[in-house]
Image (cartoon, rainbow, N blue to C red):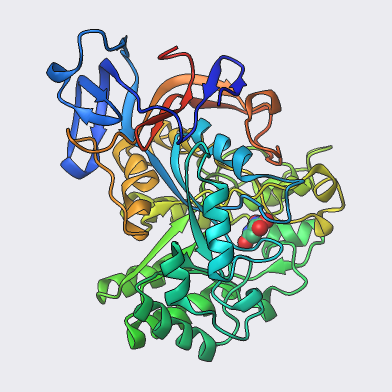
Length: 463
Ligand code: DOR
């Protein structure tokens, strides 16, 4: 397959294994603790000692570039089946490769939901020729209806790597407890979207001064906290592995911090938009969380044409500046294990509507690295921690490993941390462009992505 995007080219998992040598790049391999400027070779799809590369292998001078383990997204919406007007497995996987992701976990809130072994098998077959590995997260309750549990062992046998009712929590403690006993027996993690539906009902954005000023009903932090606290208590009782996705409040990460300190098998992720964007974006502000002071927000006039932008509606809603900075701190100190995109494509007609009516969600696969690098440039995160949180740590949640040591299948991303690009629909590979980052200049260009030994994105580096 040879689909092109501007200067680059996409490949697929069915392509021939790659062979090349890169020289002069900073090779960062968090599992081995190494970060050296050195040669790295890929021969027949595996990492190899550079001296063993064939004499005719393409050699690329890669000064200034960074080589890291391939990124793994624990949370993306590929929208098949039923939502092909927003995204497809093929398009979403190209967006992933373009953003440096080699593995994407597809969420099951599709139409119909992925809740039985046959639909898991169907989705895996659909993705066999994709531009990244697609892992399937199956529904935690039948039909995502929050009443009955599917057969988790059968879902695992069909290839599901986790279960989740993403878009909603498991509604009651009793059902969550039963689900945890069952996931523990099946050896799967439960990925929980923590949100008490009764507290969140009717809300459109984060509760606080900005919501009040905008006249929008506010989502209270307690909506997330009560489910996180409930599930931590249930994880302690059942021994289940629980992964909290897209956490968005300081209270939730504090609860996870305490649970981890008590030795519970819990993990969590945050999205790039909950780290960098704030509820002030709904009022039209376009500064990242670390670019603002405590004085602003409430007194600032609404930005004409930018306030009430449906592209800023996400679930959970964009956090206050204090919460965003707390999430960044928790990512930096390792309380937050991973960055997950919650890549949520929606067509324009579901976004260009009054704010409260907009479908929640924004795309993120192609901007995650860049937003993370902006936080690195601002001194909020180390490059090593960013790479870990995009690659090793999320892969571990679904029982996978990443490493750049010789002998391993090549699974890597090569990016230029210094180059800047402007987010523009013509530079996005996915099926939808719903992000308020359009028009924003960001650091970080992905030059090459190699998934399972195959080149899935090449921005002219090898060609
Ligand atoms: O913003 C979101 N969009 N949050 C979710 O939990 C679901 C997702 C979607 O499917 O669009």
